[in-house]
Image (tube, rainbow, N blue to C red; front, side, top):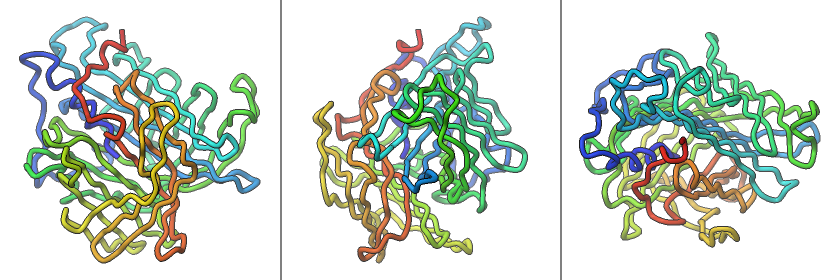
Length: 368
């Protein structure tokens, strides 16, 4: 769901007197396309694309690529080109049934020298040769030459942005200041190529053509979760009838929900939102990681008011170990969405805080 939250936590206590960042307030209208770009006055921001792809032989693949921009406590008046005032962090992953597991890669660097940046006014983010750029017609070009795989994809919108929460003001806890600005772009039409492990070396030009459907989230904030929060379950799902479903549950130290929310928009634009009491994630089956020994509820029932949805993963092993960048391991993977036993769509599920509760860490040490 919201890996930017862990980054906010990491920097919260880095200095006794950190810079003053912009705040999220209700009633602020999002503006497009300018709000698709970076918001450096806020502490943390991310662009997060996930989706299902199909190869020519019908093999389903899952993919994820995320770019984070995180402002550090460093003095923003420092004129040095080497000043680490902003960090750019990126994750990419591919879930391939031929491997039986998901694979991933990650990068982190301080912004600067045209090697790492997040530009304002329109989506244009880069970290080395990983990029996400939004064209004037609204489609996104995504490239990532990762360790063991590669993505070269075009994501074209078929629907207007979905403003999450209250017209883009998305509350994440019982306090109104525990919030972010948040919109999604569901039902993105995808085409392009991937390089798959065991199918072609990255040094070769061979690649697999793919097409599919993706989901993009963009979120920015300067605030933290509730002190009681330890992690979250999040779902973004493209349904076969053109509908879009987003749901999340932030879990507390007592195992109960600190906050929850869901939104369901049909293909005609009718939106239904669900308040915390109407949303829950209920484990159906747990998978334990052989690397971190973490149990994850990879199959779940999601309740949104009177509607229930069953989630079943494409692969059980879709854990991402990002301890070198965001300081945590979490599960993030492609899932099939069912209702009453019938498949109704596909999406991505993120599970954080299961390896350990969210902690205050500083990824700046990894950028040295």
